Length: 403
Image (tube, rainbow, N blue to C red; front, top):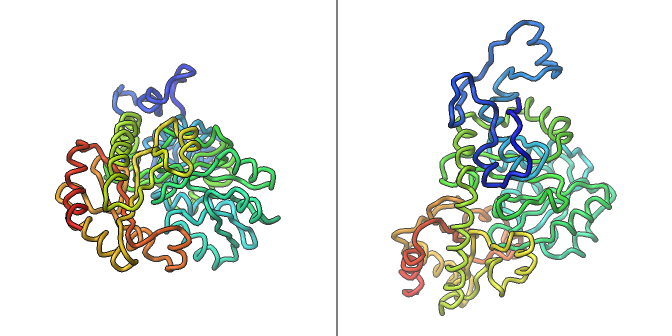
């Protein structure tokens, strides 16, 4: 189902606009939205071959769709992977990866700083089926190495992490994984392929929540896995066909069009986030700012090397407080004082979104798990959008200056 070949060595911003399946007989310039659950087959023999996987062709919505294929092709081109497979959400892509590659008795090694739902999925849900797991400090390479077991199948990292923006050395983790006969999977939601391409650093799998920057306007749920053709066709595709965690054509079309502006959005939002982080770290009511673009960030040099010299569009800040309860009260005051920016748990939108991780994304973790991940009650995550920087600052000052 591939298009007429594009020239080699096209830039990412060109691939983000031009990669797709062939145009239909009508010659549409904007990629078509194919809303259909089934496909009329040219003959019974052709139908049999297609269902058997002996011939290219669409058979049923759970097995493929031209609009979904366009999104998969475009994302794979941006990430530099052989193939991609779209899913219904970011979490469903993680579920697909784990379900396809693991069995009872296998071991997963992952960062304690990952998204809260990821920690719950691996540490609680998959544990019920005999999958073992160990969490380690995101930035401690020695801890990763020490925790590898003979039955370790996957090392799973998120870089930068949500919400503390910790950065791990992708190439070093890839070496650890491969020397142990395991695979490295990287959640690339925060950086996107515009800033960071983990496949080129040795990652075997790249995971995306397309709900975030790939869409870019907070409209739909989507997810994807980028990997080798072998992993996609032999491991992930059979499971997704049987489980049905597929991306809808409409959502695929929305994210497909979102990819066309991903480059300019990421660069513009990263620039605003950097300026806002510099400003926030000087405010007397802010105890700390977490942002890879700041020279004060513990992994600043590594981040600049891996993320094309940009820090991304997400930062977090700790408000100053005497104790955890007052920290929560102070953080809530800042959030409740907003008049322009949004109190919203999503990220990657053109609108700036703020949230309180300890009571939302990491709210279902135990206090010990939150403390291990560094999620305090005074922490506020800011996913910077495209508003004017002066308006961003003014809205935050409504709360910060009245603490």
